[in-house]
Length: 308
Image (cartoon, rainbow, N blue to C red; front, side, top):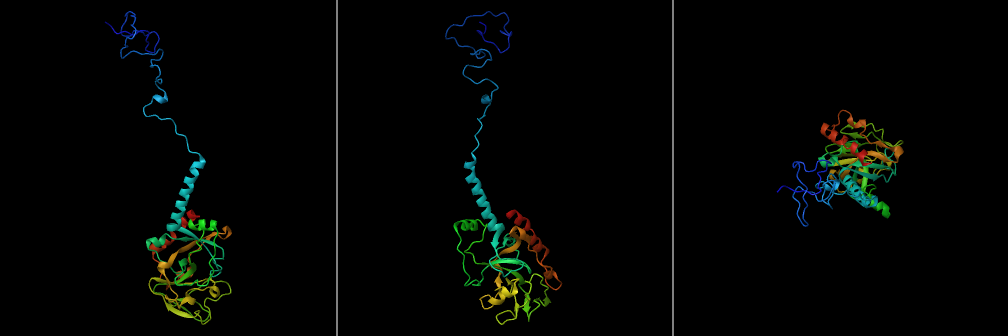
């Protein structure tokens, strides 16, 4: 007996019984099963209750489009990512510090914000002559100085590195001598390093390079390896290495106490500028930094801009 298809169409008018020309229409008894080629529903050949062929729902593995999260649900995630990035930058790359005194005038004014490179010390770079550096108090240099009490907002900003921490005892000075150097001051100057007189245009106007007093302003010291000798640019208003020679380090600052080099004045905006090494430290007779150290020193300035 031939195949039967009652009322079934292939989807093309006029092509009934293709392949079986002249086959008679035979009624199908109730309850009879159609063959595998039959279609239960009319018209397009799709079984009743099933999606039509070619629709998105019939594609294997297709899913309905996901609804995007609302802004308020994503905001905590974005804030969390920003905080993590800020902490990483503060810890390993760049940190902001505020200038608390006038000891570095006119290079830095009280209230200025500077960005400090913390990256190069991780690669073994050590402070060089002429650099302005931030360092932890080496031996009670800040004894008797008042400690500010920050408000909650300042505490949060200092925690993520946008403001200095009130609990950190840090100072900022210019490096004058490094390990192996002989630094001396006689009368009102000039300041000498390894016998070479320094021309210091950064010294505060009206100050002399050396201070004539008996508390430490007149000195001749040899800087040990692993230490630096620092002085403020406001020579007659800076409690620096000269006036701490009675401490356990004889006024020297251990290199491992150095936080990093101040490379940019970031705030206020009208005082924006870099803090390069003065040319006086490049004169013949002074040991100049190696090319590798120079490249390490210059590299983070781009990171400082990103940090801002």
